Length: 53
Image 1 (cartoon, rainbow, N blue to C red):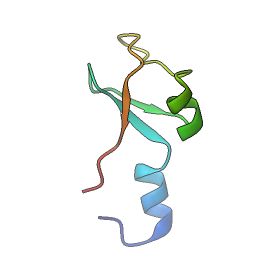
Image 2: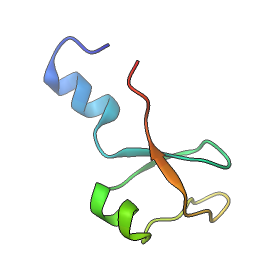
Image 3: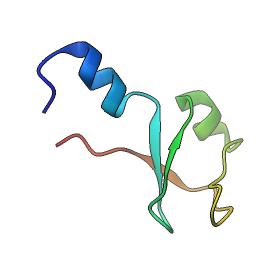
Image 4: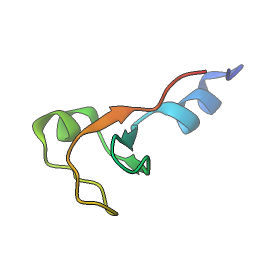
C-alpha cells in the first residue's frame, strides 16, 4: 500500500478500530492489550489493528 515508511507509519502505526462501531482510535499496543483504551463512541474495549491493504 504505502511506498515509503513515513506514509506507512502515518496510515497504520498505533491505529486501532473498534469491533462494535468501527471507529478509529490512536493508541499504543501496550495500552490496548492491557484494556486501558476504550472506544469514544460506544465505550467498548475490544479493538483490533487497522487492516493493511
